[in-house]
Image (cartoon, rainbow, N blue to C red; front, side):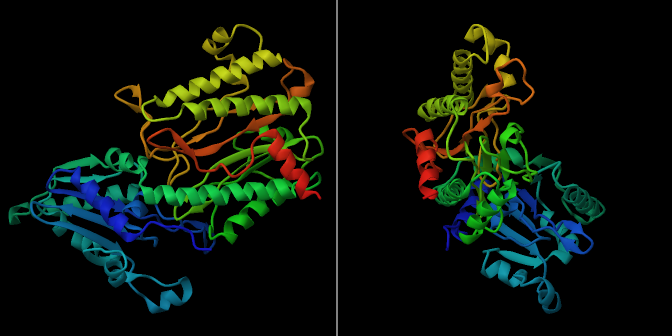
Length: 443
């Protein structure tokens, strides 16, 4: 099943928008990801660097983007592995410099083997080099090598760039605000991820292993063209649901417990990120229902608030207040709500933030503050909304009926001109919807 994807015209438009924000005589350098050895001569599955892919759509390793903005000419150079029929027998087809120009719209393309020879002449006359510092030591050392070779030729009239500037603030601000094409791809990622969670609810029963639910989810992803999950799937039954980043997924699912699943697919380099929590036997106990409906109430209150112009922090504060009030009502916290919030008492049960930016990375790039203030939401921002309650199994300050219950409800949300759109709405999340789906699957 073919899913929507970003076309080459959009990649070209991104490069144009990036350069429009940079001064004349600037050059942008972005390295690709490299193959990572898993063991012996086996490599881990290759996943392109997000910044590199955002600007090129090129998904081969050992490549380099160099974009120059001169007085009158803008040029997009793509260095990549050359065609090699013998190596392609073993490792698959390469685009080569020829394909880089034809298929990926590079103005000029060269073998990556020639980069050290060619870069000094490309940099000659440029004043500033923009690249993401601190993320790739090999690139930083290469930049220094190119500049050093240029300095040796100053008496021959070579003009050496004098400024090294962090690219991240400009490029990552672009990535934070999604285009219509990006949102369409993220809708697909959200829907595929949602239906994988539906499948997990339908087949869940006591006696299965956590990894068997994980297998159903991964199977659904792959059946819909998503070769990799966006992150390591979390399938935590019972008390394992209280471990925020539990990924062992090797315990048996037991009668009377909940299972928390945090899993999302990656579609054309864009992530889905969903969490649902549901009863392994298909029916919530009274204690499970009470905590679950409190988490859902908190999420619903936050979703109602999301719209352009509100500060990022506002929805988190809302979730804290709703959850703290509910914990007091249920007797898990004692005291005045404002005081409990001020002293952070709720953090024993709700210790993480409400959400994060979402895009090509699960925890996507983009600042959360601007000039020291929480930034205001804008149309095109995509975020997760994921309140939770986790009662540690050894928490003796609460009644035994609450212990070992971990609940999180997470959806992916794009900010629109009027409010927000939930990209992952097709997976059930009310108690009645979940129980009905699971009951129907058993008949």
